[in-house]
Amino acid sequence: MTDVPEKNPEPDTERAPDTEPAPDAERRPERPTVNVKRSVAVAGAMFLMAMSAAGPGFISQTGTFTAKYGPSFAAAIVASVLIDLAIQLNVWRVVGLSGLRAQDLANRVVPYSGHVLAFLVVVGGLVFGIGNISAAGLGLQDATGIDLRYGAVVSAVIAIVIFNYRALEGTVDRAVIGLGVLKIALIAIVAVITAPPVGQAALRTVAPVGLDFLPVLTLIGGTVGGYITYAGAHRLIESGTTGPENLRTITRGSINGILVTGVLRVLLFLGILGAVAAGAQLSKTDPAGSAFAFALGPVGLHLFGVVLWTAGMTSTIGASFTSASFLRTLSPTVDRRFNLTISAFVAVCTIAFLVIGQAPSSLLVFAGAFNGLILPFGLGLLLWIAWRRRDLLAGVRQPVWLLIIGVAAFAFTVYAGVESVAAIPAIFR
Image (cartoon, rainbow, N blue to C red; front, side, top):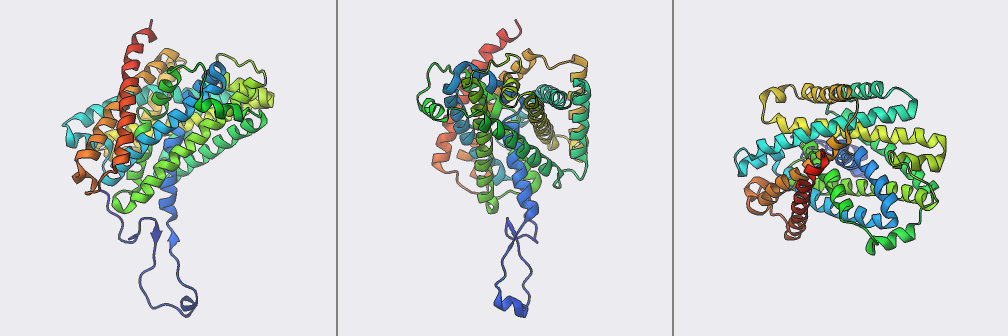
């Protein structure tokens, strides 16, 4: 477990050492100052998880499913947020209290299960990394007109610079927060301009019509599966925000992260729904982009390019960091060269994209199904630790209600995983 620095006895504040108060202090009581570095790190973990959960795949899925199901797709959005909340509350709490990464916790209860989990996460991260960097390149192409491949290379270089310029000491966190805020702001503009039928969407949230189960399954696998499950929690460990003394911060961070991604998902859905309700004919190849173009004209496509680029960049950062963090404690070389490993991950994904020429849709669908298998495996191990291994959680008991919703989410992910396995043969036909 990461020790709390002696200069910071309180997890979220810094206090001056006990000294004789100055005359002014007698008249004006001293107040603790906010630990800015810790606050930025927690916000960075929150946005890393939230933005990874709303990446390029989610944007495309939302456009496709909103065009197909209309207001009823709101029910799938809300269901995905609730399930994400149940999962992330448990994962952040277990990882945060223990101060151990998911692979190390897994190895404590089932030998070598952490190695298996790390392998699954890294393989899924690599496949999705190709899609993320290609989406970033496509976003730059839409925004500036630059060639797709050049855009991917430029995006990869920016990501590598972010990780290696005073990496993990604020640069990564501030980059993710800034990109996330920009992404939400642009999507909110479209949601306002298209004037969606909010009342109808609210009604269909509790009374959907003609909604299949597939959208919910797809959203869960793509928004909380694979590396996304652990992105924020592992970032907390890097910042030292662990242990019972930080439990309130850990819990608040997980809730706020899901709320951020929930707001983003709802805004994107409403923006596209407004375009559909106004009679827009969305492109099958780029439904979300065509909704932006409908709302804002030619400039809309350029703004969507910025949204897609921010989505690709935040997902690239999330996938690269989290995948490397799964290898960090299993390989001394990776631990010593952590930033170099992250950079190599980004470079490999970029080179693979340049060689392939695109991110094949079948490969990305396979990655989504693959992530659907990772989720119940890792979540099941962490729930077992929460229930039976309090010794790994500094003796803190997991609330019964939290275990119950976690088990319910686990049962759903098992079902989703079975459905994903059944769908894999059809992907490559």
